[in-house]
Image (tube, rainbow, N blue to C red):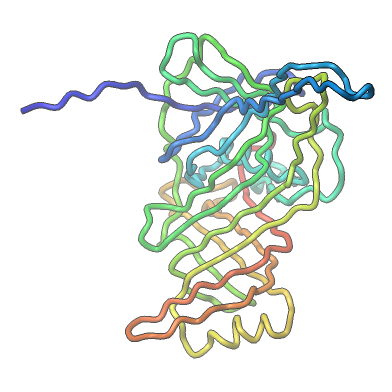
Length: 329
């Protein structure tokens, strides 16, 4: 007996834009190990005529607004000597980022932080996304995109550390042809053996971590615009959670921290083996991600066997440092 499967492959690529409204040209394949939920986001608005009131407008129509965007699948936190695809995605979410040049004797240091002030619509760092649906003439294009929400996930038994973006676009539509080869990311991934965690300066050993940062972009719309007309950076918010085996330091590290109502510092760092290349000056490829967190109330389970606690935090802010031989995005 044989089974026949029919279908098509979909894939996504992204590119940096030089200006608002200008489609990117230098494309990177979005190598994800999961499905996306991108859509044009049509939201019909119903207007129904009302009679019997002399002040009521006599109208009966539907107008469709489009809010293009959606979640993409998990993307590997893949780094090399330049790490350009990853840098572009991070820079699009952290709209308050900066970098320092290394002068050719040291790598450039990219520091990714949330925006702390309002940004003019034309001054955002935009990306273009295109999705090949496998159907001729029905490719999708998302223009003037910002990663509104970004999540990071890792577990001790998973393959590697990933990030998952959710985008919002100012415009979306259909494109007839999307060229590309879908080449997989060949840079270095971070797994259990290459990641380290410290909490308040002490090394800890979580079994999994998850974090989400949100720009909280509202859907700025107008009656004359079929979709979003602008972006507006709001108050950045975020969450952090982890699972770890309980030991005799657990209360001091977390329960007492919550009781005192103070913020703590979580640092997630990773270093790749030199076989993945070295940065200018010979340093191994690495990253440092600093989270400033407040502990939420903890529910401690009881029972026999290994006890694994889930600890939840409120993220006040965070800062991600990545060195790269690339001196310009």
